[in-house]
Length: 541
Image 1 (cartoon, rainbow, N blue to C red):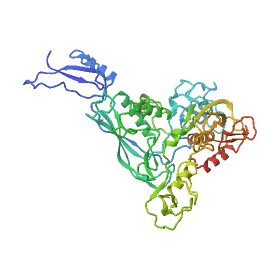
Image 2: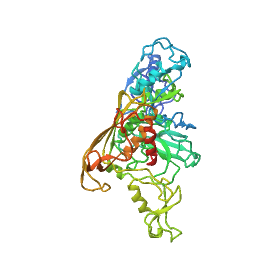
Image 3: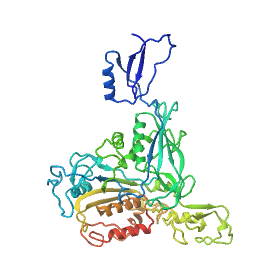
Image 4: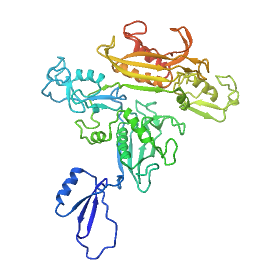
């Protein structure tokens, strides 16, 4: 057999040996030429068939597969001027327009799709199509998705969309760092480089300070191993980026500057090769990041590629006619010890020298020059830092002079678990909405330093509460989840029910614990309004 050329296809697990004409002069010895090609089984089959008479197919089984060549690629994200729906920042199902009435029956109510339940709308206006392409009466599918977030026909849960994030517009680049192994991955001789560019711009209506400029950046870098697991994760991160989930506008923990682009806690990234919480090696990172993306309902890599390429029934980014918010069954752990270790994000500015030495701190009444001082950026009032920190431990992150907020609220609830479930019964006063069931479980334990009697034992509790499974109820649920994870739902004190001290009791946030009326039960038409007002008073977002 004469001289040959080995062509490797994509992942290197298949190669084609192609005979080539002998050169006029003997060439110097050289390794086989590697030509990177995007691998496709169907394309390879066609190629192999065409070469069947003149070539041999050789199967190789390398230990790993990598991208040996990857041109620098850009993924652009353009932030919307406004979020299309109030519930678009929550997991939701997208319902799309139907241009013509198909034949057949609605799989849910068994009535013909051509029937219209309202004379003021056409039959088409009463129909809705899911991402998978199946069509239902709009009222039927909305009610079904609230309780069973999947297609009633095919069972596809891919109709559920991740929330939309609040990242500003920018560009994500990804390429390969050749000859740069990713620490901790012997099967990754090279590394995937991710670079983000988010230029300076003006904040949108859904940002903290609409109309104010924010500080952008160029070339913020992150890294992934160049192996199968790393490439799958890259695909899911690209999907999250295109839904605005990677960054947000807030206060930078590094510089302390407000109105900055900050990493979202929703999608963690590794930004160095030097170890530490944000660097490689980290054997748990891939698993943790996938779990975070799962919680956001980001689909697996194959589905992400299909949606972003427009191969699905509905193209990625097509505007739905309506989004139906979805409540997911979940358990949320709250650990008061770990929460205490998380630094507060306070919008304060250090003051090394206070010019008015005779001015007193409004909290302790001592001269400001007698200690380290900070200024609340929003209102410019100054205090001793230690005085504000003591106020922050009590969850009162407001300026004592004007009441301006300077940090996130925190409470002193003991550790426990919040479970979210769905009931098939109608929530009284909110028909036809079903019921969301909340269960709080707080075991007995020992009081901490910030409780009324440190070192003394407290009695735990199990509590149940309810919400309507409609848009208002789901939005309130998101705020109650925030309150729970910040220790604001319960406290330790005197129980009016048990007439006993050192018990876990409700804090100031009202809950409805019954479905048969009464002061603490449904129906109550103003409960959601009152509860939101209470959360506003606690400075919850």
